[in-house]
Length: 108
Image (cartoon, rainbow, N blue to C red; front, side):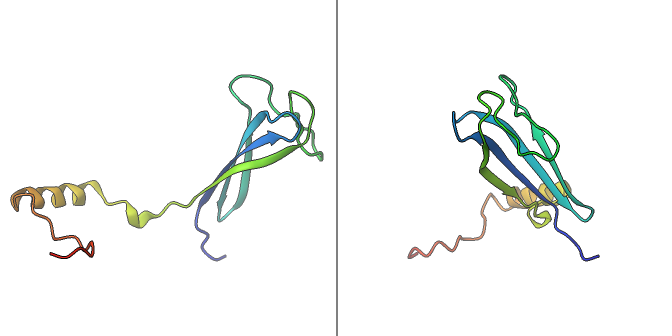
């Protein structure tokens, strides 16, 4: 099986009729497949869930749609080990805080 980049997808289920945010949806994709979780709100009714049926609004019974979808793709290249970060900060302190000039495109 080919390598699959782990991805987390987050969104909210909103009601077409009353606009109520009925639930938050989270999904994880990895090499084993996709897992979806429906999380009820902290206050108020959660969605009406029945096997084989579309979820319905817990407040008015209306149809729900998925909104405000965020896709999170972890990039291990952006995270440096703590020892490397400490060494970089120490070297900058030794150099008097001077860092290489930025390439902002402005004339010198």
